[in-house]
Length: 231
Image 1 (tube, rainbow, N blue to C red):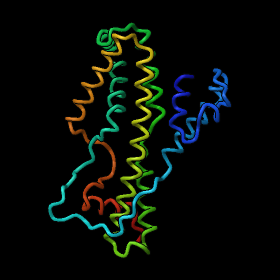
Image 2: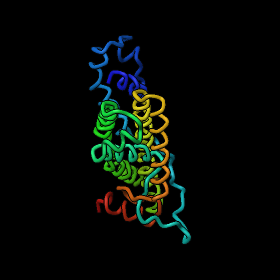
Image 3: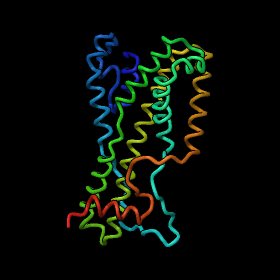
Image 4: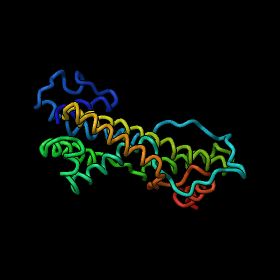
């Protein structure tokens, strides 16, 4: 747990061992900052990043690609793969022990790491919606026309969503490194082969994920109308 918290410090802006722990890396000091690290990481997810103004952007043409539903992004692959691994551990622990070549104790440690990670992260889509509607409201007097406002609002949604995805990808890289650290070398290779195979299958499957449709303008206009219009 201590090693995990120290690694997570690297994800918190401006937080280093010298600043946050005062140079003290004892278990007591590290445990004392666990809550503040989690709060800081959660706050980082809610920070609205700057996005480039798009007042002069034009709406899609007649040849616009129509997205019917959002699908898994590359940044989300590890989280989905590892969450499914967590389910597989509960369903078939013996089979995974044989797959990775590890004993029940190591598999339990892996399960604990995955369970903690699953409870730590959420991709709150309402934060993306708030960013979109905030941009919509703020562009009322600057965008010039409704179409320009819609483009600005959709850009804000996509920028906020990407910010969250990047955070999740960094976090789950830490989780993978943590699991690799407890496994013997042969098991590390099997574990990585397992992840690569599941990532490839998932990427090719085109699975639908929750979220607003903002890639195509027509769907994005409906999203803005539904969430952001006050009149």
